[in-house]
Amino acid sequence: MTSSNKFQIDHLGIAVRSLDAALQFYEHQLGFTEAQRETVDQEKVKIAMLPAGESRIELLEATEPDSVIAKFIEKRGEGLHHVALKVPDLAATVDRLRTQGARLLNDPRPGAGGHLYVFVHPLSTGGVLLELIQQ
Ligand code: ZN
Image (cartoon, rainbow, N blue to C red; front, side, top):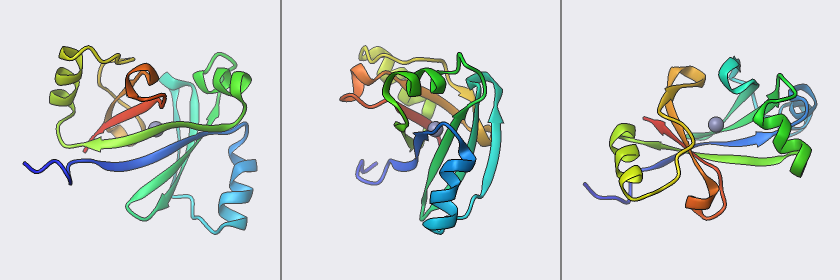
């Protein structure tokens, strides 16, 4: 397999205080169209997905004060929260990363849209929270 075309940026996750306030900019001012709105209970977030070519912008709003998104905004303000890559074989990627000592934050589990995902700690990725999603 050539490695050049193996990965695709699935979405950029942006932490916001209010989806509706953020959509004022992204939808009404910039012209994005919201394709999907979903609550992910296990992450205590509401998300709005905005298609951007082959990729998407994912706006994230906390639904509980102890949500990771609420804590992130408390500490750092609104902003880029994670980068999500689609991988062809998530299980194999997770095995390889574990073997090599990368810090994964969860076991693969279904998230928004039912796709399996894991998060990789910024300490392993050059300072960016990385989400890997099964293609
Ligand atoms: Zn995401």
